[in-house]
Length: 80
Image (cartoon, rainbow, N blue to C red):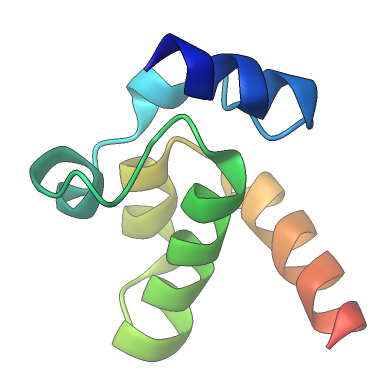
């Protein structure tokens, strides 16, 4: 586990606030790693866009603010 933390830190994708991720995906399934910020952001965006959950509920479950959500969404929309 610590090796993965070192790798994530080294490539800039370590989520230092991983303890704030409360989504059941990240709690119940070992595939989902709350320390991987890219995976957390992707799943957060997907949950709002595909599953239709509210932004307020979603950001709370993923440990982000609404402002951060819109910034992340804006960056992902401009790339794709």
